[in-house]
Every structure is written in structure tokens, then in C-alpha cells.
Image (tube, rainbow, N blue to C red; front, side):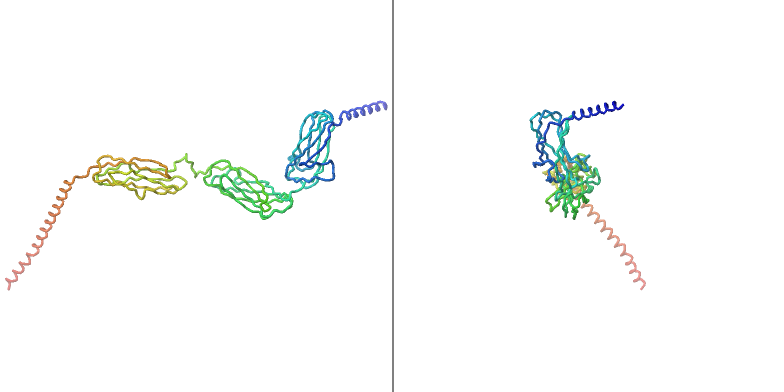
Length: 421
């Protein structure tokens, strides 16, 4: 029984030795490591100072002493709280290396603002499928920049879209990631394509790590801004405006129902009261023209009537008016025909224009009828005079008759008195 146990133990030792023997060292040597063009020595007591909140460039020179396949090279920092989400490392490969050949491997390592100020190990790791890994460690000091402010978040209200003409409120969350207190921090929000902006100041943000402040900014979207997506820029200026941080977000602007598009409704409405009037030679007529400005801005309108040799034409109150948005006014075309104006339909035009652009041209008609002849007029005047004279004579006769009737009784009374005496 003891002999069997000894044999089994010997077999286990042989298997273990075989496993160890199978993981041969990788035939690759790390010649040099540089961080931002500064050469580092492995496990050296002097640390390289690196500020957080940036991406550092790492170059690794390696030499293969033998041919080796599927080599992966990784450079990373361990101990970062959020490595699972923001990996502080980079990897190159796999790639095949030829014997007696030097290779330059390049890496970019993001150093988050969330790194604590402390000492860290920069680890350079070479691995492949079967060989033992090659690893070297380099000392780094993650430092805090003197001045550093970060915009953590920008929240809009309304959150996703805002109607043209309405207010947009933004809550800006700011964090001091530097080692100095920041005073008079300027926070500005602007929508460049709309030409609107708002600015506020934060008196101070303490220099304690992760010290945060929140600022609210308010601006109004132009009433008739075009619908669409707009960039919203939030800029934080600090340290006497020598440094700044900017973040760009987008907001959807929706149409204001009060602002009709030009294609949806006409801006000007022109109504002609009457396009034909009948009157005698030497007579007059009036043609009303009503104009309504349905646009968003005030506009001037001019009515021009072509000159006529058979009549005098004038405008009232004037040939040019100014109408505000949504306003209506009536203009009148007065036509005074000559006494010898040709009989029949006389056509003339009225053109309505605004800002040099003709909006409409309308044809107006004057139907001229013959005026009564002068002879007939004279006869009528004579008859009228005779009638007046006749009426005067009749009136005189009636008057005299009444006077005579009143005087006769008085004479009779006189005769009676004389007879009595």
C-alpha cells in the first residue's frame, strides 16, 4: 500500500514538473518605456508626475530574441475606482515578432478626472498563448492641475424640445477639479444660430476635491424661429477668464402656431370694392381698394393709377400708406370726368405695390354717359324762371285780394255813424 502511494506521488510530481516546463519564458525583452517622451526606469524611486484629466502617450520598445507569435502588449494603471467603466489602459496586438528585431509599440491611456491624487504603478504586460508573461512596473504620481473646472451636466427644461417664443431654462452643474479655489466663475449659454444668449456668475467654488456648484440660466427662443435642431453651447470661464471649458448640446425648436409660413397664407390681401362705375360727362365716381397686411411686420403700400386725358384722378387719403401687422385700410380712387369726356366704357389700371414689388394690377372701368344738351338745359331754366315768376304774381294777387276784403267793413261803419248824427 505504501508502495502504491509513493508511485502516485512520484507521478504527480512528474506531471507538475511537466506543466512548469511547458510555460517557457517569453523570448521578448522590454528595452525602454517612455511616457509623453520621458524615459522611465522600472521600479525606480523617482516618480513621473502626470496630471489627471488628460490622455498620456506611452511608447514601449521591445526586442524579440526568438520568433514568437500572437504577442499582446498591454499598458495600464491599477487601482482606479472606475476601471470597469473607464479603463485606464490600452492594448496592442496580437502580432508576430521576429527574432533579433526591435519594435515600437504605441499606447494612449486616458487619465480620468476621477483619479485620486496618489502614487500608481504603470504596468507594462506582454503575453501570448503559451509563454510566461513579461511584466515591468513604473512609478507614476497622478497629480491635480492647479486650475480645472469641469461641466458635469447640462439639463434643459423643457427637456427635449421647446416651442418658438417660449423660454428655455438650463441647469448647469459645475465641478472644481483643480487645487485652487475659483472666484467669479462665468457661465454663458448661447444658441449661435438664433443669436440669443444668457450669462450668470458663480461667486466662488471651493478648492476641495469634487466641490460642485449648480447655476441656472434662462433665455427666450425668438417667437418665429425656424423649427429644427439647434446647437446650445455652454461655456464656463474661470481664473480671470484665462481658462474655459465648453460643452455643446442640442435642443429641438418646434414651430409657433402664431407664425404662419409664407407658403401657408398670403401676407397681403387686396379687395376691390367696385371695378365699374357709370356716371355722366363732367361727373365723378369713387373706386374703393381695401388692403390687409397679414404679415408679421409693418409694410408700406402704394397705389398707382395711370394718367388719363379724359379725367382727373386722385387718391385718398394718399397714394401710400403704412400698415402694421394684421391691420386693414381702405384707399379710394376718385375720378372726375371732363365735360367732354368720350362716351362709353373707359378702362384704366390701378397697380398696388409694396417695397418696389408689384402685388396686383386691376382694371377699372368708367362707363361715361352723355350729359344733357345746353339747349334743353336753357329751356328748362327758362321754364323754371317763368314758373317762379307766375308763382310770385299769383302770390301778389292773393295778397291784394285779402287786403281789399279787410278794408270794406270799415267804410260801412263810417257811413252808419254819419247817418246817426
